Amino acid sequence: MRAMLITGDSLTWAEVPDPRPRAGEVLIEVHAAALNRADLMQRAGTYPSPEGWPEWMGLEVAGIIRQAPAGSRWTAGDRVCALLGGGGYAEQVAVPADMVLPVPAGLSLVEAAAIPEAFATAQLNLHLEGGMQRGDTVFIQAGASGLGVAAIQLAKAAGATVVTTVGSEDKRAFVAGFGADVIINYKNEDVAAILRRHPLDIALDCVAGPQLGTYLAGMQRGGRWIVIAALGGPTTTIDAADLFRRGIRLIGSTLRSRTVATKAAILAQLEREVWPRFASGALRVAIHRALPMAQADEAHGILRRNANLGKVVLALPAADPAEVR
Image (cartoon, rainbow, N blue to C red; front, top):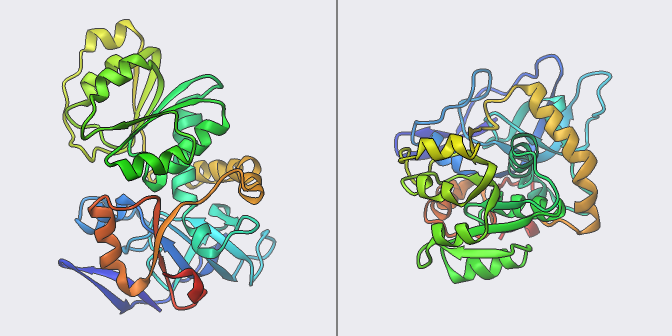
């Protein structure tokens, strides 16, 4: 089979050995692979695939099962999407059966590929780490990203008030369409001042950076600030006395490093609670653009420029040509 390899500063669609499913794994013919910022980090050499996963990029895919273990819920021909530790930029991938989900009713494979990583990350951090409750005020950085859109929708479905950041007025209009209540253009508005007017119970933060310390002042007593990435930089200054006096919890969290069992439990919860909402239209998948796998470098450029409204997806020739635009 072929996979997209990192060769210096370039990406190369090259022949690699076919995956050999281990006990309890399914073999998926990949039709679409969604992009995540972790892919850019992996390409830069700072975020390699965990042990046991292919070296090439790709944290979520959708496609057709070609091989399944006896006694599993899966059979050859099933349309599925899957959460991966790596290896999605390829024609095939072997995945633990418990990290595979059916494609939600009514969705295309391109749309389904954009669900597992974003919605599992949102579910993990808002519910398991953040303990989100109805009536909470939730701050979501980068609301127009794939993760941002997923988190906004899950928070609103849980009865939370959503405060989010964007970097342009078109992104403001975009996230308003998903129900965000307070939308801050961080390029021309004072984020810290606005947060103080809307005290937060939970923050889902992929930015961190120098401003994190000042943003913490906008949390309620007992608030949970969850850092899942540091796109704005790794350092800040925090008033530790204020942190412990108000019982603020600063939490570091990644989905990729969790055990298969933990990821499987999150995915099972999504299938029970969230999948019906996709089928009913109550939740939507936001696809900014789907490009052929051969244009992976162009797709990375969209993320690098923060030009996307929602997810960017790479489609393979097996995908329906009408889904690639």
